[in-house]
Image (cartoon, rainbow, N blue to C red; front, top):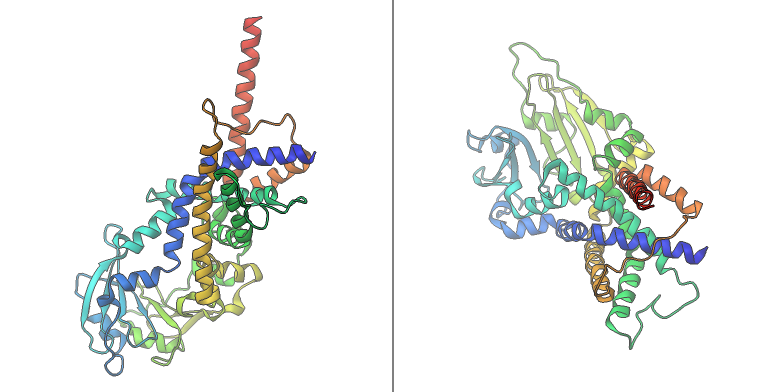
Length: 416
């Protein structure tokens, strides 16, 4: 049974790898870049992100007023670093959002750019949906879901089973294909826990596994508040309070606040201010606090911190930090970078090994097993439910097998 199970796992590992590797290489390389997105963005356009500190920061309302009238402010992003500019995000026009950068001490607008058209924005779009909209999101989810299967099956194929050479270290004096096999298996086995964490956290934002599975499990106060925020009490003839007043009402003391600040401005008359503070670089999810402020009275409507999350909600709130590695600070992001590069290597070395062993005629697909052991069948059912993209693929494969079986049977009857 062990040999038969090994052959079945090898066949599925082979087929899934050949199919998913091209997409996984794109996801991995863009993910490696996005782990250091802030550093890349600032290095490419330092004149927009950095200024020479010169005294105290001006009031937020004055800084927002410095942007041109063509920009309808939607949000303000403020860093605790006095050398960083203040970012003012404009209301999207034709689904394109511009952002202005303002000198915090001098109140001068330094320039503008469009994030979706920047280098980092394009990297994110490729990583998110291959620049193909929701269809691309489904392709990314499909490839990532099968990446989980590849990691689990790869770990099973790598398992020592009494051998030493080629398990913990690459063998010497072997040809190219065995050497590639050793590197492929050993490097993948060492990094597979990190890869599983990154892949699983990424799947929580997908259309099928995320919206149909994960989101339903962590419906807590924080989750409901973000999706259905409280409204302001509209007072006829009364003006809205300013941005600085809303920030002060939220209990944020500028400029001594060590966390990054994000303020979402009211768009409709009944909207409230959203004041969100979080750790620099999203390194500590527990430091994030969200406060909704009545836009007319300045009253605190709701405040959501770490204590308002359920257990699953706290995990959900940590997913971004896990996915990009920021939860471990700089070492965590370096680990995420290495893991992403390893995934890209696995996506290249797998097909490379196949090209080395593929016969001149045929594809060299591992042979099909006549029967599937019930534990493996049960594992497929569980994975198909947890990862709908895998489940739908399995159903499609079963449907094709049934059609092929029916066609062969009909052909045999016709020949008889």
